[in-house]
Length: 172
Image (tube, rainbow, N blue to C red; front, side, top):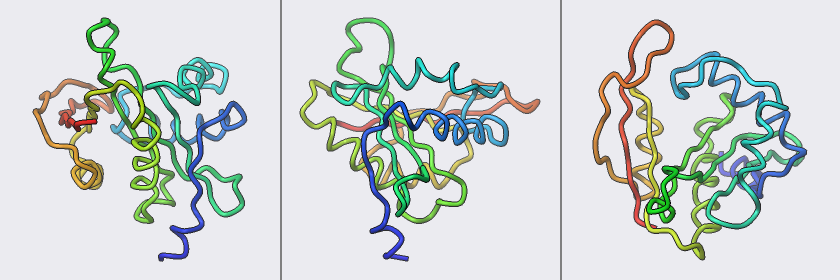
């Protein structure tokens, strides 16, 4: 499906994307253990998250759109790793792809665009937590230079069971 991949556009996220981004995220909240949020969000509740990812600086939001530039196929973010000042050169990254857009290279395009956007920032490491099991996400992260550094066992409870989170890091 190379033609589908070339039709995907990646750009910084903007406030007009809020409703679609919220709907995409809510799918993962309702249906999967990929996020440990357990209650869906309204767009207004999600607005502070969007606004915490400006078009410059170390905390970014990149959005993938389809050929009509309206449909959001996925997004990737870099966010603060921890609140204490010494962590400022580390970010936590994440990527979410619309269920119908998986396997088309959207996650790869998003992460590549995100890391290119971050290349001029004063950053040292990127971290990603992957709820287990999630082989597709592990493969994506490893392909893009992340390496597994450890696993938190049964660290989150959702859908009546405990989930492990594997942690990955990447040099920036």
